[in-house]
Image (cartoon, rainbow, N blue to C red; front, side, top):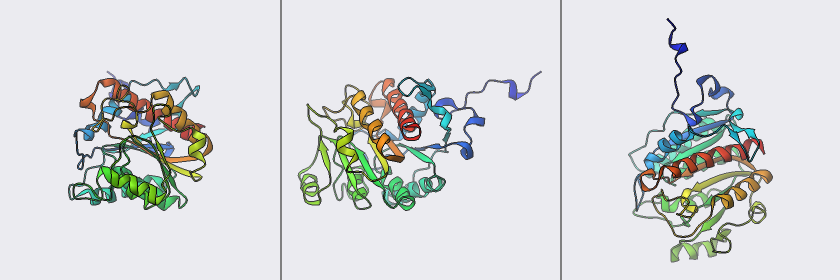
Length: 293
């Protein structure tokens, strides 16, 4: 009779990576699930995003045709799920910052899976402590530049505003903005690439020259066209296609060092299973762009 070692267990982690290949010490990337959506203002359910992405990732091919290599060879560790802080959004920002910092100081590429976009504030706060020259590429259908929303300055609708107070930020893919936000963007001079029919996203060259050597990328999945990504809490007509988003991300990673990123706002119940699979593949590709380009 064989022991448990002879039984083919399937681990529930990103890419279904065997434990011996997913040890933190030997991995260059860390996937951090953050199932939090306390400040969502339209469709709730992004707290289920991390689980859906990790589950879908188990169906990915390790070999990536575009990069011509097995991205998983960089080593991908899946951290324990970060427990939400129900004391309030400000406390959750600090909890995310503490968790991300624990990996960032080890030189790991942290992939924060949300959850709502407010988790980016904590992640950037952590990376800013490690890389003082940090800048942020913020991809979102919405400007997220409100100073406060629904009683808190740490709403998902305020995430870009808080980030801009910490370090330089570039907005791209924006196609929904309030009058207050538009005025602030113009007054503060935040580089913003508005989504248009002709150009839903800027070229890598347009973005790179506005970014520092070390870059954090924050991706709200609603930057994509709803026909491509329906499963988001705040869908917005128009937006980027899959290939356009990849072109921008790969171009940035070739010219700048992507030190960490988040992938947020997947609300799996709002769309087909293909949306979670797209999110998983996007995370996997950006790990490859960041560590292998």
